[in-house]
Every structure is written in C-alpha cells, then in structure tokens.
Image 1 (cartoon, rainbow, N blue to C red):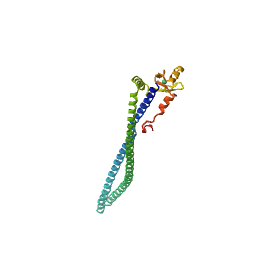
Image 2 (tube, protein in one colour):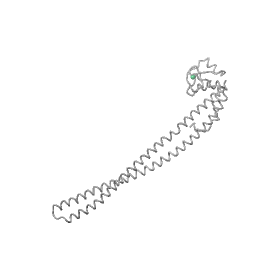
Image 3 (tube, protein in one colour):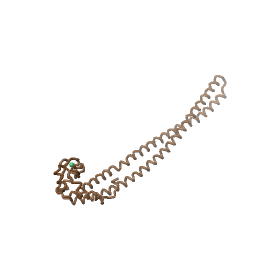
Image 4 (tube, rainbow, N blue to C red):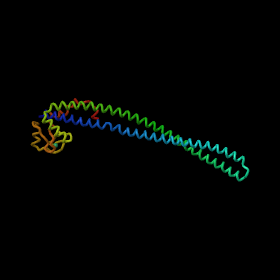
Length: 255
Ligand SMILES: [Zn+2]
C-alpha cells in the first residue's frame, strides 16, 4: 500500500505543478497588455500634440499675411494723406494711420506669443517622440522575454505531462479513478498528509484508533471529515518520496 500511496503523492505533485505552470502560461501575456495600452496612449498624445502644433503654425501664417496687408494699407493711407486738402480730412486720415499702427503692433504681439507657443509645442513633440521610442523598446523587450518564458513553461509542462502519464500507467485503475474523482472535487488536493493525528488539509483530528491504523500503512484510508485519501506523513517511506525530486525539470516556473 505504501508504494501505491507514494505514486499518488508523486502524481498529485505532478498535477499541482501542471496546474501552476498552466496558470503562468495563461497569465504571462497580461504583462505585455499593460505596456501595449501605455504605448497606445502615448501614440495618441503624440498625434494630438502634433495636430495642436500644426494648428498654431497655421494661425501664425495667417497673422504673417495680415502683417503684410498692413504695409499695403499704410502705403494707401500715406498716399491719401499727401492728397488731402482740408484739416478735418487730414485729422481723420492721421487717426486712420495711427489705428493701423496700433493694430499692427497688437498683431505682432500675437505673432510673438504664437512663436513661443510653437517652440514649446515643438519641444513637447520631441519629448513625446523620445518617450514613445523608449516605450516601444520596453514593449518589444518585454514581449520577447514573455515569449521566451512561455516557451520555457511549455517545455516544463511537457516534462510534467509525460511524468504524469507514466505515473498514471503505474497506478491501478480503481485507485486512479478515486484519486481523479477527489482531485476534481477537492480543489486539487486528493491525497492529504496526516501529522500528529491531524489531517493537514482540512485540519481535523483523526480518531486515535484510526490514526494507529494509518501509521501501520497497510490499508487505504480516508479522512472522515474531508474524505481525502490520507497517509502518515512522518513515515520514513513517504519522506523519501517527497524528498526525491531529482527529476524535476529545470524550469523557471518556481520563481
Ligand atoms: Zn481531512
């Protein structure tokens, strides 16, 4: 019986490893997902900032045109001034020139502010480009790392699956069925160690007479509380089983 129990212990360890590795394979892509979202947000911001910069440049070109127009208007006003006869007309024309001057100054001030905004926008766009490039690099590096990790995990998974198949083949059908039934219905723990008369999975005590029988290890026994198959963990036979893990594949799944 002890030999059979040993095989079940090994099978459970194998199944547990398979479960953990499968979970890691499933979770691995989540690491890239966050980075991808960050990268997409950075791309969107870059585009928005570029659009803003273009709008500022366009506005600045409009004002440049307006300033050129002022010069034409000045010329016209000056011609007008030289042909004026009455004082009243002259005063009005002078005021017109004065207004034009003031308006030109205001427009030039606007152009200066716009130039400053354009310079700031250009700096911002350059910073965006740098950040985006860094994010892209981090994303690609992480993606490669994750792919390598998934490859490693798949390799380890294969080793454990083969080991599981071999173990299953060495366990008699009734016992294996019982194990599989419990594994499914008892949260992946079908066989539980008992130490000091206590089931180490459900933490309920085993009656003394039953515990004595368990220590002998002659028959298959179950915890009367959680119904899992139980074994006496202090038996040197099982300690050798759990320590003998030499054939565990060298994988990164135990990180
Ligand atoms: Zn129990």
